Amino acid sequence: MQGSKAFSVQAYLRYVEQENGEDDAADLPVSTFECRTIAGVRLKVEEAKEITITVKLFAFFRENRFKQQDQNFLQGSTVREIIMAQSIDPEEVGVTMINSRHCTLDHKPVQGDQLAIFPVIGGG
Image (cartoon, rainbow, N blue to C red):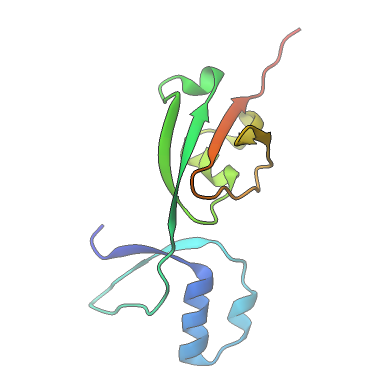
């Protein structure tokens, strides 16, 4: 999309506060969203940084996907968001690991991390 950039909500709220003198906007939850330049109007916000992480899928998660792939995400993305970006339901995930250490779905990987995603495995 031409003119599209990703920005953090925090950066946008700082802009809104500066332009409108509003303080209560800072209480909104912080996530990410996409801002577009519309009719030549540009927002004065900080551009969000991207990170590259290696995503590794295991067992049946690899079917019609990949085994290992470097992918770009916005800084501050959670493991849950990354899983959903793979078209995987977080309810189907049994174990997640960052750099060979167990992590939660709310963990936020950093540049260069390796994320391993294992499905729930049942049996008897």
